[in-house]
Image (tube, rainbow, N blue to C red):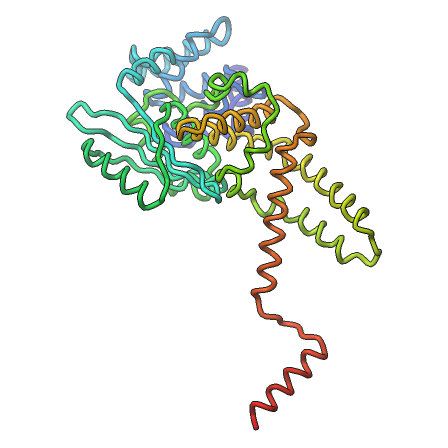
Amino acid sequence: MAHSKEIDQDDAGLIAAGYDPTLAPAEAVAKLAELKGRAAVSDVPIARALGKVNDARAAAMLAEMEAGASGAIRREIRRALFRLKQHGIEPRATEAPRANIAATETSASLTALLSPIDAEGARIVWIVKPRIQGGVLRLWALISEAEGLVGAQNTGLTRRELKSEREQLEARARMKLVEADWRLGDFIICEAYRNTPEKRRGQVGNFLTLRAELIGSPPPADFDHPIYSEFAAESTGEPSIELMKEPEIQEWRLREALIKPYVDEIGQLGESMIVLSPVQKQQRVNIVIERALGDLLTGENARRVRRRLEDIAYYMARDGRRTQAGWAAGAAAKLRDSGDVRQSAFFQALVRTQLGTLAAEEQQKAVDEPRLIMTPAEAMRAREAARMRRR
């Protein structure tokens, strides 16, 4: 009974962390892979939960965990593997350690293609794997920064069809797909799937099954982005403000809900009953902007901005813009390593541009929309004009 109570407590801890024991096997393994490594979640309950998922992916994840485990954790992993073995499920030899998986899949020539990130945070990722019978299997994914994984599908293609579809997409969207490390492409898609709101998960509910047709390892919960080693020197310097001239940065729009409160606050300074000198007004504007920098570039907001800068740097490097890629890598590293970027000229310019762009859009919208409330003088002129038309 004591053992049963312990298991119940462990299950409760996993559920509190977001795990649902009723998930389909592929989704259950993906969720447990996501939880693994979190400070609040031990490997012991994860191993026990995996032992209840009758699926080869659960066995593969347990085998991977066992490679670096010892003591109580290793014993629990062995018990979980034994339970799965009783159901006829054992890890394949090629699935045991992650290094073997990665080597197998790399030797199978897995490749990825990435589109640039558009102004709204949308992009396309392809992962391509050769088929033994000829041609390729392509995993196509549409990703939104705000909505997560919007769509995913697998398609079998000849290499000529793959080349043709790439050319058509690039011509239609007026952009370039760049070759990428498949592991980065996989991480981008899996990260988007984790960020997909629960109410929309059903629309891409078979993503994990689609992924398993190309990749045997569990979905990665984290990834060491290659830009930091590729641009090691640039990552230690101050990001150049010249980066603001690049289209990926100029077209970038932070979510309106995040920046509108600061735009409204700055706008209210001009409507204040207190008469402010230009210097006083600018001082108050600077205070609002400094607070926006502190709010928009810390915590989860900072992580999202950093992730976008990492992928922008990666794309630029493969688009032949290595100097600019180094600047973007430096900006990403600044967010990763510094707790405060308020003194950074680049991030000051980024936030000022975001606020200024939204303010200009709102002003233009006010000009374009018809006036619903007239002043008395405007009402009198309108009535006089209507009377003259009736004559």
